[in-house]
Image (tube, rainbow, N blue to C red):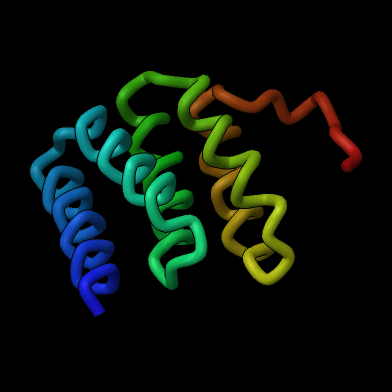
Length: 101
């Protein structure tokens, strides 16, 4: 029960930072939440919004790191495709380079 409250509080803090436009801080908060609770129901949200926040903060490595984790989750294929498109638009992924995993 305490873990559920903590993971909600941590991801909620990250969302608040993101809403305030504090993208670098939000990205770190999302990554910290995922790192501490990788099996939580908020984990995939943390990967998705964390990667977007890193990208918006100009941290390509951080964005790619979380994207790589998200795309390994089969049930999140739609979100990983959405994130992939976002990373193309931000110039973080090169659409002319394909990857087969």
